[in-house]
Image (cartoon, rainbow, N blue to C red; front, side):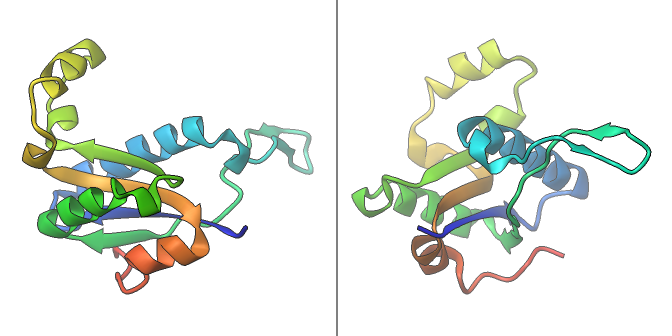
Length: 137
């Protein structure tokens, strides 16, 4: 199985929120899929550098409506084996994780505005969902 990971981020967000969204998605994906992080490496002078992700993760651009539709599609049984991380307006608006737990429990899924999604799965399925999306530049 050839694995592919992508991030899709709302291009209309301010640059700081885009960067924060990518960071949060990456950290969470790394926790969910630790095998995608390589071993530590040593440079010529003997300095250790912690392992980084060992596969490319293109960052694609979308808008709020596309992200919402894509997230809904990812709940379908056909995509159940994929690893999906989402970051929403509710999460971004919280100062502490306990606050997020409380707030998200009061929100219907269709009310969330997604800032970004990280998607990992078979290359065929990831391409089916995101193959026509442009890179975020």
